[in-house]
Image 1 (tube, rainbow, N blue to C red):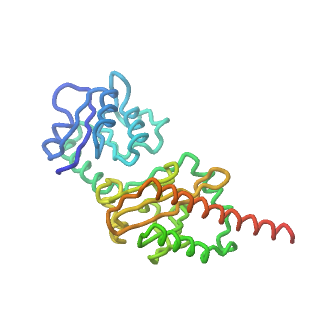
Image 2: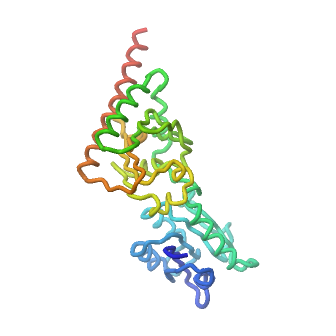
Image 3: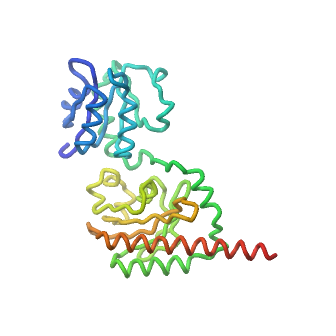
Amino acid sequence: MTGIRVLCADPTDGPGPETALDAAGFPTVDSNTVADAKQGVDEHEIDCIVTEYQFPDGTGLELVEHVRETAPDTPCVVYTETPPTELDTSRFEGAIVEYMRKGMPDADERLGAAVQDMIDHSAQIGYLLPDDEQSRLDALAEYDLDAMDVEAWAERISTLGGSHFDVPVAFVGLVEENEENFLGCHGADWDTINREDTICTHTVLEEGTMVVEDITDDHRFQNNDTLLSLGIRSYAGANMVDSTGHTLGSLCLIDYEPREFSEEQLANLRRFADEAVEQLELRRELIAAREGER
């Protein structure tokens, strides 16, 4: 269990979930208020959250909301005596990864197993969506990729990116509803990856760029079998944002070794991404103009 840390938030006196997790070999950070638990999330590197529902200063869902804002991929368990029908989930749709009822047979033993499983498979649990996901997909649907014939251009800009940044793989990827579609991929023969497996799923939640210097040190990706099977070790991606402010996908760099990227390199990567989306918009406008002349 070395390196794994679980935050346990429980206001009750006496043995709580931390006792069961300690027995299972998980180091814990213990809190008995929502405020203290939020502080623990901010001050420690946490791999999983186990929280009660009712606290004197709020609810466990407020803690879940805070976690989603600061470390959105951290698995969370609401471990409570409160029945699910009494949980106010109206403001936290999709936030709870797991609900477990205290007092059930072997609950403590099952809690340890559930935490281990969630940490092992956190990359495959699911993924968060941007706040503008539907309008983003609508904007993406306006690009008729077949009519635009983008393959040659996308391969060219990917090749330029790979050469400029001296990386073995560079690609232009559009993040669609259920998968990432590689318009051009220099250095590898990749067509699509399921959205739950691709790093760009997380990049589109960010502003500008996202860097993962070593995926084996990042809990979001260290158990992602797809990425590991492709040999991916480090990643840098810059979002492709169109003129309406919607993120269509990313222009990305991949290395098979851990790697750092300088601020200058990331600024240049953003310029490449801006060029990529400008080319897409230009091709869309040319097609619209031709159709308007008919």
